[in-house]
Length: 257
Picture 1 (cartoon, rainbow, N blue to C red):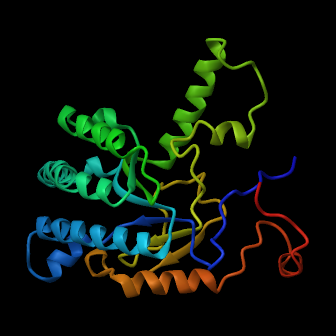
Picture 2: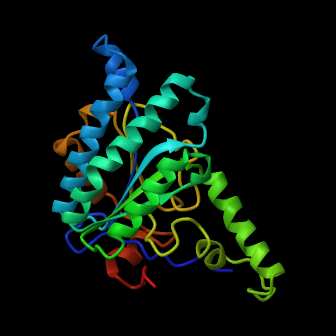
């Protein structure tokens, strides 16, 4: 059976359509400055604001940020509590600005574990910005790649049992239609800051053909130049999706659906 076609390709000027980022290093950045970890998380929020603005200016269509993984609940309770409070405060402060700049906000992940106030704020932010088209900002919160694939399969099973879906073979297209990112292009470029070189259960299905870029820069230090360096690396690579380099150069195949 042939592999699924890939709908995510760079724009004509080589800018990735979809960039996904693991924002790592807030705590270490604060520790280097002999400050509490909270100081690093607050600095990280400022970097998020700058990166969103820069990606919008570059013409990136989708930016996905890994804000809180399903494994982050294992952190000290005080730090988790701080992250929840910072999450709510940031949403309250930034949603109107995102809306004003035409940015659509989406959340992926199991939000049922979050406080009700945060869940409500997430939903209201999505509703307020749902018709915006300048950039789609996806926040992965209480998200894990294993969870995403499991919930997709559960949806398919439940719909089939209820008669909504006819019994049918499981295909990549069927699974993709039930992932939390359904309707979005797969990431073209994955960036992880902080020096670690792993994907840490992030968008495992969606990253199948994504270009990976790791940088030692801690997240609060990730500036416009750092982003430009990552995109420059992306532009230098040949994306073949299982084809030969000759086929790509001669444009004898079609990579998009």
